[in-house]
Image 1 (cartoon, rainbow, N blue to C red):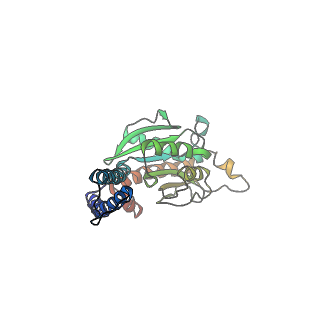
Image 2: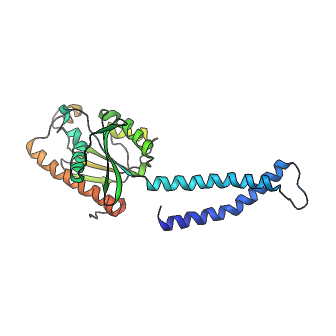
Image 3: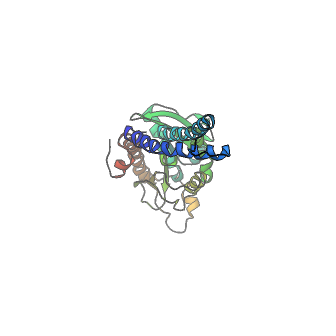
Amino acid sequence: MTFVGRLATSASFASLRSTTRQTARLLCTHDAGKVDANTRTPRSAYRRTTAAIGLGLSKALHTSDTLEDSPWLIVGLGNPGARYDGTRHNVGFQVLDTLAGRLGVSLGRAQDKALQSRATIAGQQVVLAKPITFMNVSGEAVGKLTRYYKIPSHKVLVVHDDLDLPTGKVRLRARGGHGGHNGMRSITQHLKGSQDFPRLKIGIGRPAGQLPVASFVLQAFNKAEATEVDIAVQECCDIIHSIMAVGLEKALSGVRA
């Protein structure tokens, strides 16, 4: 939490303390069964009650600090296994592999249904993750990771393919629906229905003719498309660095660092 945030929070808790004391006095006198003319409260009961209420306030403040101090979770979506390498549905994996290479870390440790690694980007602690569930149940891994690292949804950045964007087009969004993407649908479900998590989309285009979408997304890019996607993957890594360096809001407005 920032210094200003702490001041604001402290002010809020200070304003509550007076009410807390009054509440404690009323609770104690009620429990005592007798209220004298001066509404005097048994000292031991008063202290126990104010301590209990104060403990609750302290835990609330600690929880707020913990969430703000938690790392970012950066998730690339795809299907596990060599047979899916280089396919349209696996561009999220491609971004995470490239980002890990830039950072000099390896996504080789399997935990909570994901290959993952800890790293630092522009001074921010991050967890890089590639779910080893299949795409349609990616949320199983994301849900486990957010609970393990105590990461709030607004610090979960998901990188995934998008049929509705031209091949190689990159788009950053702060929140939104799943747009028919089964991996994103699963993640939303496992984040208790929250759509308030940023996502970085890479366009893969739509199939021509009568080719089913399910078959199209499992195809490899042709040579020309692969070149465009390679450029998009590097752009995604730059955007992720910018989010960590200048914040999500500025990155959304186009600021790059």
